[in-house]
Length: 312
Image 1: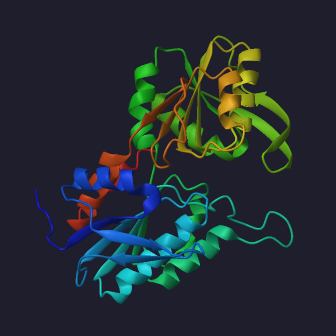
Image 2: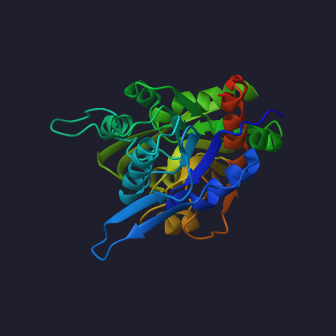
């Protein structure tokens, strides 16, 4: 195995455990970095080892609070000022990705703003997973390695396939993702159509497709308040489904999410560790992205193709 001596992997605080596992999968230890917090809440990051001439990987998911994003920006700036050769940010969960367009007057395009800030800070490349909208890749003027949760989820779904499965999308926006799974597994597809009056609140939902007598597999890029997913699961059961499982890459799980999950018809929720799970739950199973990111970093360092990981 070819290993580069000019590679260092560092972690920001919110993704320190995941970064440690990714570094171990790649075959190195985490670099030494400290964060000093002042009494007013301001913080400063510092590399405690040289990064001059090194290819620096900085791992951080940018879920709220926004300090997570700002800490990443400070790390990038520190690496640039310390004469790093290349700076690659590894953002397993790319926050603000839901703000990818102007869907009503007088709103910001937050995902583009974040991309601008990262490029202004001095990144040379970004590696991320299951962006909420694929077009966010075009917001960057540097290479983007966009990995898919399907690389991890597809083998697990295949184990569940007893000839009675049907793939499902919790909304029209996830239809493309669910359809890709359905084609690959050669099974049917169902879609929930939802209407919202405001964010995180569903006004009406209907099912497109026949789920009667089927084991439903819901797929989505993230689960936040769990309103859409649990309502879709309950609706599928009302329409005659035998069971409902959900595969969601990013476990945001905010507000009433855990309570809704407990009271829902979802038999099992499978997520990844791109975001640390806030609390254990009987219905939640976590699959790790460790080896996927570790292998992609290895291939990137050795200038090898990573297209074999693009299952979807």
